[in-house]
Length: 264
Image (cartoon, rainbow, N blue to C red; front, side, top):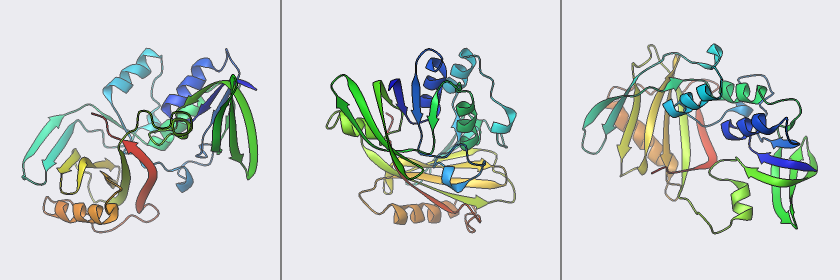
């Protein structure tokens, strides 16, 4: 029995657990094994890993300083924006911090007090309302476990199981398939990139340098053929000087089954 159960130990879930963990009995559930040695492919998240200025400000207000080992070179301050249909380009100044998303999540989880019951990896299978309580069923180390909580927070992303089970039919969001691929580079690009092409998606694609690697990603409508659209994006970028020929060993193509929602 818990006062609060939180599904998802990303930035939102881990922060809430940190703030309330000494005042209430809290259960924190996370499907990734964020306590596995760093760099594990099982913990890899399909995410570009940029920290926006509003998030930087929030960390400062909470009295948190970002550890140096969370950051990734190069630190860049401009975004090259390309409309692939018209061929127009613009450069915009932006102040994102380039970071390792897995290390960022591990750091936030490390700040959660030991009074919180942290279960990771734990795959939540069912949530339901029973009278005044929430009942959760989840898999942990192959065993089915149950917990009850007076309050429940779904911090499990755009494809939230909590939202799906408890708020079916309400606040429906348009879903996209996120795809990323890692490429080795001889020299890091001096900018982030964003690409638009409505023939491929009504969302966008991106590149983010990470040391000697380059991430190419895109959010694509799952109703069509996302893999084919991603391949077409790579072919189009060749004309703009992006060398995307050799897939990085151990990284390769990252397909996210977790859908994402479009922010207006």
